[in-house]
Image (cartoon, rainbow, N blue to C red; front, side, top):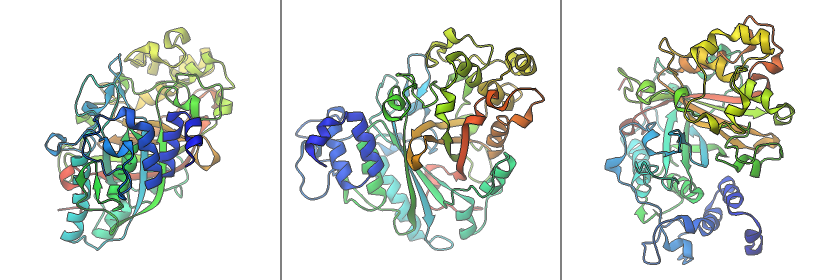
Length: 450
């Protein structure tokens, strides 16, 4: 990349572009841009995150926070304690996300050697990179790495049989009223996320066997011989990022997501225990629903702030109490059981009902949510459409089906125009996938029934 051009591009935009491009050159350039965020000094052990060619750039002499495998939680999906927490107590997703859609090329069933190679690849990551914030409750920036690998029904079909709890993506799509052909087609998926773009890129290269060392740690294995990359997706989230990146000038300047409002309020998310498989096969793990969606932002922002508040949250919400991007709500979305009960009343009075209000109808008998969003809408402008990668974990995929069905217009006996029926009319599904996410101990090529 031209150094003069690098200086012209704001750092955040440059790093996002580097993550999207991928590869050793993008990683080296990204490290140079992010070196002020990394701990260490000129005496640090070389990261191995610059190309293994004797590179002696300033970035090569700095390091990411090193990992401690003994401090990593048993479950891959347990991220909450290792995420940045905002002033209101809500968890904040890391800015950069990479999704690797994978095809399985290994044996049936997997050999011990194949399993060890995959497990070693992920052990390398937990040794080389701190698990998120490392559990630092005061952290304001996530300099570590969070990751998980999930396996689709198509993978399990190849190695011996699909677990009963794992719903096929075609079934899920049909159950929520969408085209069952819109499956992502992956056998497995890896999600890597961090506030440091170069950490994501370095981890990707290590997993794929494209590095000998990463962050001073010898790379002991790779997934390349048994899991090949079918598709690479990137996304980003964070205050001001959508307004900075996307071609929609009406996005509020401090909005963390492309539709203008923050999400992940404490009251709208279940505990990690609540989404963890409690017993039986794959106990301690969870299920993952991964979706790619497009958004009609032009039409969404063609409405007033008051109308968008009513459709995103609830028509009874006071727009001033919500604020420009939802921060005024603190740690509580303001959605109550009364709001759910009053859907017909609100429809008649306001000629609209809210997305959060509708989704709350899928909560359990104690009015507790059952779906834990792991990426809350990482905005991306891939495929010439503004959209986002959405991922959630839940004990059973049935919980995701219930939440998604609750968004549908036909679920309610109210006379409200489709365009005022929450946000469903502004979203279009590109594809969806369903996965089982084992514990760290079982992450390497699991087989049902073992």
